[in-house]
Length: 89
Image (cartoon, rainbow, N blue to C red; front, side, top):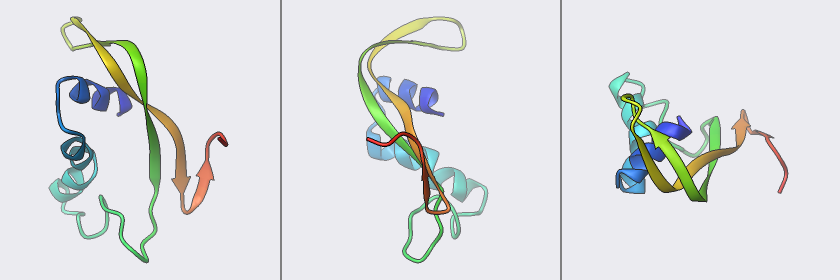
């Protein structure tokens, strides 16, 4: 998922639209938008924490063509049922 998100970021998709595209929109498409895809008070949430890395990264499309991006997403940790799983800063 982080790689696909990185590709759309490289293509110029605005970050707020990108976040909606991988959270609220899939939940809505599956008719789960009342329970999933958003952070709400008093609701359990499983969250993947991402960081944006800066550098020079080669991203490949399905035809094997490469594009160089200056940013990419990388997993930084997970919150599962309120418990953090990942490296400590």
